[in-house]
Length: 436
Image 1 (cartoon, rainbow, N blue to C red):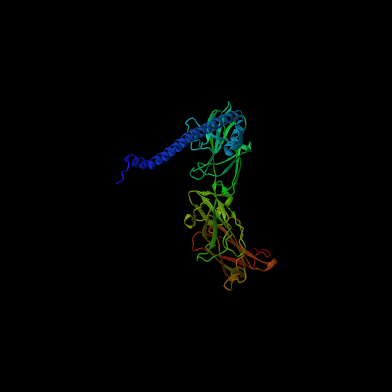
Image 2: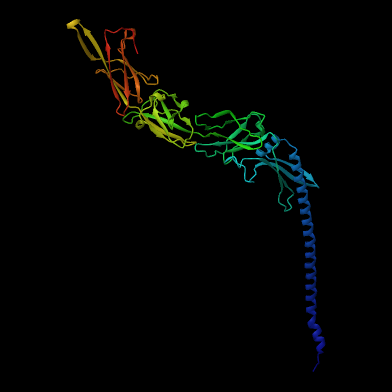
């Protein structure tokens, strides 16, 4: 029997453990080295970020000092268009943005909702963005106070009911560089203006009108109060439109001569005019109108004098950016023309009448607008046409004999949807040479 030394066997068993210990030791050395390296690298990166942030803060402060030396007009220009530029420092490129806003004593956003939050100061801010190293932008801000004799001022554009209208360009006539566009409250700030100058502003936005239907508003006075903030309001909003069509009492399309609109009992002067119509058509071209919260009253006729009773007026609501249709009724005017002949004299004088066919009939409304001639009278001396409501309608008929014509004129009134009737008599003994 061979005997094995137990200590030798033990040494052979430990050979594997030694190898494992060497591998684990090497791995620990690598991990510790990586940790130490990461620590050094993180510290280096943090040091770089701190350096970049310090440079950015210095650039922002320099920009603040630069803006403080600028004129108010120059600063106010930044309110509408911030000024950005690139600056190189320490081998790195930074973006510096100069911006100007409006502030007040309450530190609330400057607006036109009342005089209290209107701008009393200019808030200048400098934002610097550095290299893409993990730092966020650095912003430094401060306030600039008005000088003596200056006042903060603003224009607020409002619609009917006082609601602000955003997106409307407002021009300062004396310094176009300070012009701006209204914000969500309908407000545009003009910074600090000198009270020694008479300032005015103008507005001319395509598709917008004032309550009178004017798109261009020029040289509107602007209030400037030294040492305080002031607001000047103007009513101006996105226009809507009304397109009128005309029908007779039975709802059949007819040609109209014009339409009149009125709001809150006030005639709209610039809309009281005949509309340009093409012969044989019914709809008018669209009226451009201010979008009042209340409805418009509309009726057929070329002027306020042709206004019918309220019950015969149409109601139409105008909404900005939309065309509202309205159908206006022209009642029927029935005309009868007869000829009158007188024979004999004294007790033997006799007057006879007979229907006059082929007579020429023309109608002039209360506004003085003459309508196209009605169809010639038929064998019963009758003709008819559709005309606006109104008093003082002049109806003229002649016997259609050229230079030898005789005529008669009568006054009619159309006050209801049932229309009106009028009879004209042409006396054969009247002076010839009088046609309609």
